[in-house]
Length: 441
Image (cartoon, rainbow, N blue to C red; front, side, top):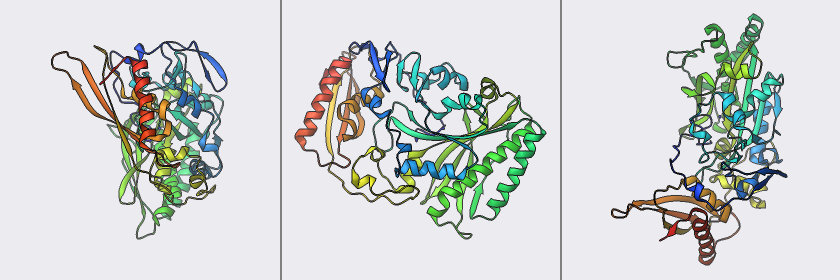
């Protein structure tokens, strides 16, 4: 259910280095304070001050913020669903991974990809971490919008905090439940037939996107059809007005087979917008063990997840993901709750590039996400992007050298002077030396 980081697809597909430099970091404090509570730290602790500072902000609940408006538009399309938006971002690895049948060796579990308070508590990496909890308390139709956290690179479309909306519906796996779904399918199909939308579909079931062994294929067909009709209608609601869809020039939506740990069959949805296909969301028929874990084994249904920033950047023409966190009135004053308007840039300050080159300790590696977290802790959102520009192994000593190029550019305050950028870069170098014992070149 990244914005890439791709909604549901490949939640974290990066490998984990066998020898991880963070283990060489300076000694961490015994406790870390998160959302006003103290937690013991341990070998897994990697949550950074920058990330802790983001936890209370909840952009999706701030009136007039683009993410709040987008959340409201989605919720308005599902008025009979329970709307949730205040669940704590602190979950257990068991909730985040095991209850959803993630493999034990899934790279998303790694400290290079996820933020851990300690080995027992982490920040959710997706809204699906609450799926079992919400189903278990009796909800059958619900939307959950929340902030989620993944360690990531630094550029204009990636941020370690982003926001997802997850939607789900389950019904009884009997004739009564199927009758409910069939009636809803008829209603939705009639609505779409009268609308300016062109749908490129794939089979509800196939040999490469099969029915789960525990499910009746006829039931799965009905559930998958209801999922597709519901989301085609949502795409119409979100995008038709923005593309000026007409009978002669309809909104184009296409479905693609996919693979996720928690749904089978699974799909991705794309919309043709401003001349190209955009990945919008991932979805599918809920994996039965997830429902078993929620003690609703007699149910079956569907779920979807989408990244709000990904869609908002397109709908509002917001060019840089950092802007969502801006407190500049020139940004915030452009938006009103319930209205989608085109963002008008108010500044474009010159870039200031600084290189950081260093030798790693012998036999060690440094994950790019560790470097990016360090840069964020020092310079915050003044950094626009970070790129690895050189990766070199000395032929005689076998020592490894890395060189990163950091682009310092303010989003909205003012142009950074070269002296100010040099000062920030010097702090990055100092922290890099202290934290990872590197030798600066």
